[in-house]
Image (tube, rainbow over all chains, first blue to last red; front, side, top):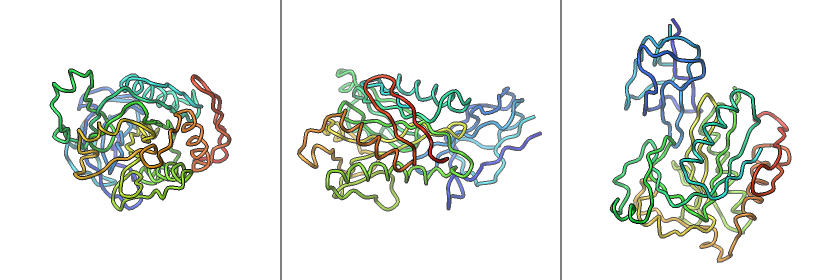
Length: 76
Length: 227
């Protein structure tokens, strides 16, 4: 199981807001594919899947604030 | 490389951006700048709301003007002929993965460009974009997929500014928009604008010479150093 954590997006920024979930639990995903979209200021960041596999869990929803380092999804 | 799409519908240009971003990640292409002007369109970013559109949708429909929800940061804006769109498709390498810093670099490009006209462009604290004398001339909203950038900046060279009266641009009440033409009284050709701003882009982003010739494929960008 791989835990997917929000990486640092910018200096001095410790959180971002989830604006869209491209995938749901149970979906197959490819490495590099967009998983979850977040916004910080005027930037939209699509979190890429770090591996190919099946998305086991999505731990955030649209509108959630996510902290850098927080686990947002798990891939098996 | 440079891809100059000329006057293109927003949706078609968006598809090109996403295709190029995917190819950039695969290493099939180098960093690429997509240039375009769009047919009249309002776009609403991820943090935006259609309530910031102040005209009736029937009014726009009759005139063939669409309102699109798009996946860039920011609120509502207008695109139309006379506005230069620059969509950088740049792979952000490890040490450059700072999205706010990247936006500040895009602002630097716009500031350098506007300074060519003896204007005094600057930033507004807490906001993104470039202003001259309290009026917004350049808007920025970016997207990142797989650490490759898309979306970018819109520079008002000489668009019909009346369209901005139909919205609260960027969701900001009271914001006034300006164009290079309205500020200088000069008729600046889009070709001249492209050549100048690409030159400013290569300086800020530390590229080698960006070769440019309109309208189709232009040539290569050579990296001097990693950005």
